[in-house]
Image 1 (cartoon, rainbow, N blue to C red):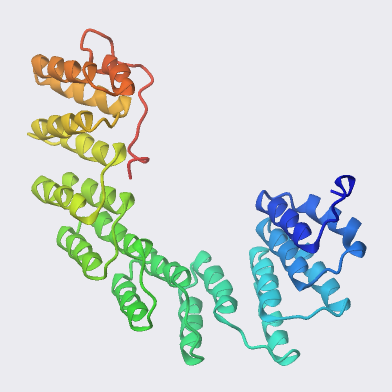
Image 2 (cartoon, rainbow, N blue to C red; image 1 turned 90 degrees about the vertical axis):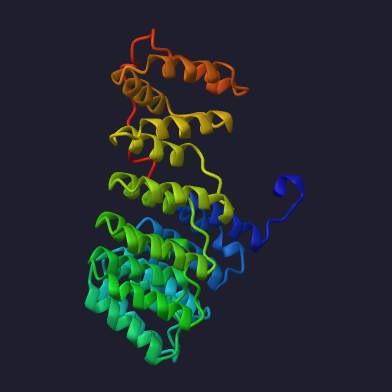
Length: 350
């Protein structure tokens, strides 16, 4: 910059460090900082950016060194700086030391932990599947009237669901609403995943209705989980009802959702007609199907002796306005051998 007659500012330095840390080039950021720190009036924010970078690469030692250097320079130590240190220590599996630093923050500097301080420990406890510790931390936040954000709540909701404590998860959703923290789609998806895993049709559909009442719009993952479960248990009628309600909620299905329906229906006795209908809808909408979807549907139709239907679908694909669908029509050509390296999409559709 100086070559062009422009003197770099502290803001420029921060921008550089943020960019390097975003791509986990923390060592490069640290080396440059050590080289130029005497030329800038660095602040607590400068140190926090670098500490956060070391936390991301789980090097708590370097983060701690920076924190101590920041204090030795007489820079202000605030809650945000401590929160960055706590996150670095926890990511480095030094949780006990993080608790010691939390006490130091309160007793030495008279700083009160905020929601972000507790969130560090809650996320760490959730990752370790320590349900008791998680609940205690959440209760402590309530006692001190510190409200968790939706991300922290979601960590706990997800833990309850993983431990199959579904009633506790619902209580937490109610608590979020009571405390003015609106559950998001990921809050509900965590609970829905349990209902779908246990094939609890009515409970899953009631949860979808609750999302409507709480003005939370489902997204692709929500629908795909639900559709896959409904088709899998033979409730094609309910799957179709859910599908028909998508547009009313402002969701327009793409290839993954169509594939969930088509693949599920192909594997259900008597479902081939419906599978063809969804495939035709897909082609008419100009949405390119997966090659494996074309091949699965073609194989099922040929297995049932429905050669004419295969030809009809092949013809529709050939006449599509989408060049991609036209190219994919070869997968529906019954005169050609099946593609040998068929790609499974079961995971990506959900």
